[in-house]
Length: 314
Image (cartoon, rainbow, N blue to C red; front, side):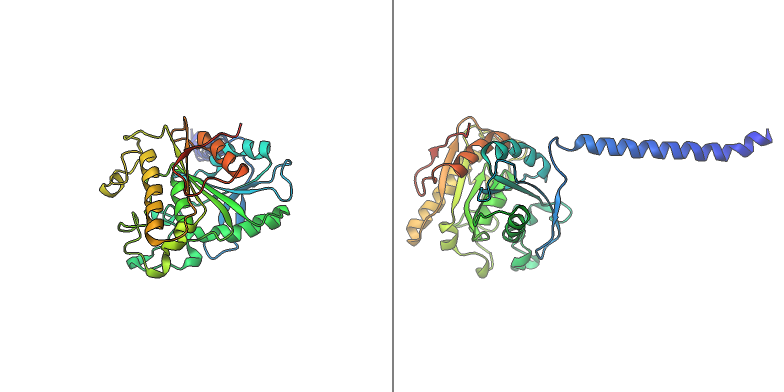
């Protein structure tokens, strides 16, 4: 009996060690299973004044030195690996470079610091522009060019859903001087350039943060899924200000574009925006992406024209 009692602590220790090892293996297997298939390990980008960013990037064998460079901005779930997995087949088929940065919730909490770019700091004061989320893209472009030996001098930035909110504000705030095209696909709501209290409009922004003429001249493409018309979608913002923009994402996209067109006439300012609709596309990045690729690789979009139907890259 005494021997059995003496052995009991050792048995408990052995059992605890086995349980710990099992849990470690289970967690590792779960993490591996959760990772999107075909997604490489991210690289770390820290050559800017903000927090280091994990970046999923690929130069496929089909991409020449002067291939287009396309930044893809993830949605509200901060799931850069999923967006990379959705865009990888398109990059490989059409020969362009994809760069998908991850703006984590820990380093960029809430919509203020990702969707809105972190342009406004505490007390409504302008935040340090070098630390805006938007400000990571230009130095990241240099980083990617050097890493992959690219000759491209300009890039395209695309975002879907929350990424589309990032994208259209990236354009409005002039954060991408080397962007030849910024595609905002299926944003849930917008910062209108003409009126409205921030973040629904520019009212209340520090004067040095926003230039209406610069915003209107940006090479912005509003890509609107024609089937993104569910007024009860779970992630659709329903504040009074958002509802004033329209009942659905499709309606809000068209209203935003029209507001920009009207303001350009009022100010006599140049207008660089386009509006393209995507037949059959609901709130789904994988469905919107082929329409974006057609814009990236095809003829320039019709600037200043009424909204028109786009085509898929097949």
